[in-house]
Length: 233
Image (cartoon, rainbow, N blue to C red; front, side, top):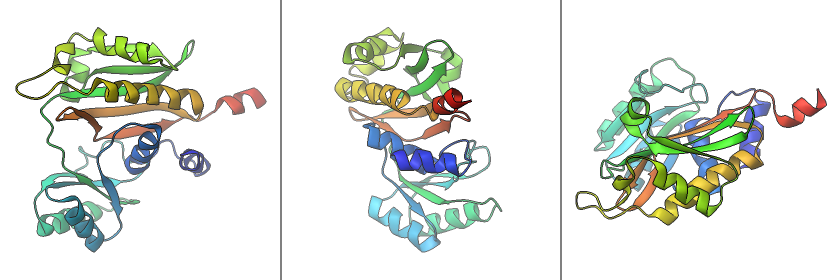
């Protein structure tokens, strides 16, 4: 994890790619979708077969923070031919990529949440939890805590959102695994405390797959100036 973050900073990156962002949060303890980075059409097809159809393909680079708007995301691909065509389309846009991210398709049960990390000038790293997906900006149903988080802090955050009923049994789906959700929130707080190099983390959506929360999209933004740099300045 440390090598990924520090290597990106050494390279002058402002953010981690989605592939590396997911690697970092997964190592911290956040459940993520299965992902693989393909550097050829054949690799993309092989990874897709391994995961099982359908799959998602995404252009992967540390400078791609708005992939959907740029046509770099292809959803619910159902066979080898669709994956091959999507790979060619993504790589044919003339954008320098690390590769193409092949990701398992997670249908979920329409319950989507957001988990994030920000740095407050006064309080330092703060963890956010709330309603995710397309409703994040519209409803702003979120709660915050200063990191590091205790288990009790995370439990309270979960119970503070107005839409907390979605975490219980919902339209025939089981209640969300609260222990898993609590561990994910604590893990994100710990990342903020342990790594001054991380400015922000955005996990949206965190999809509920059965009872399990799973991060299907993640972005880690890096600080231009770390605490160590500030002290030596």
